[in-house]
Length: 339
Ligand code: ADE
Ligand code: ZN
Image (cartoon, rainbow, N blue to C red; front, side, top):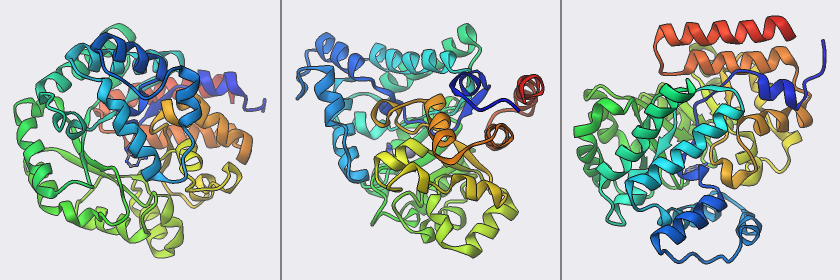
């Protein structure tokens, strides 16, 4: 078997289930949008921005991430943001994406919900038609805000509900357990939406349990702290609950002090349905390929393991049976000629 290298991983057909569109805002686009929209940002150069991306924890990152989103004002900005991400996906052979967006980050600044969703979905449609990248959109509630605020956001989303596949939960995890949002998630499920939630990134394994039991999530975003609860690990494996793991994010935010400590392959070997994702690639040092490369270098990823990680993503995705089969065929075709 030839070695796992950058080219093989870049060519590997992939799928992304954990990506915050706001987290794909590259410094170059941030400067362009700041200029176009006459918004002042506290940086003079792209290099200065990149140097500022050193984080001790999740909150450290979120402070800068929410501030950067101030450059997004009109529909075209949301289109450009999403389109830039899709072009990156094309370069890295990503077949299907299920991105998150955080409407409250923008509506709290006076931007209409319609502006945000129109820009994003116009780009996602172009992604399907021009690049062949399929997608399902996930709307996240910010967990540091109240459940009442989340209800208002769900109301705003109602006219566009057919463009949204699922609701999610993100932002500051500690002190904001999933059960804080039980009622709004129940309402979302009544409306026909699927549910996911960030849980067990910085927060305890108990948050993964309540995400599953109270919010009835189909997938857990991150979920790496499950490793501290052996009963939960067995449950996750038995039920094949997908965990959308983000290796570069986890080291950038000090969830693991070094990539060599990352437990993604231990979890894989225990039959947990782990997947590889990029989270906030503009902030954490890379997109899908770079995340695969990072674990390949630090953890000696094999080709069969890489294939299984993609397979888990396909199985855990919210797309149709037909599209899943298409992607399985593409993956099989690639791996049978190169494994
Ligand atoms: N929002 C953007 N990235 C996030 C992360 N890694 N955890 C929680 N909220 C987020
Ligand atoms: Zn995330």
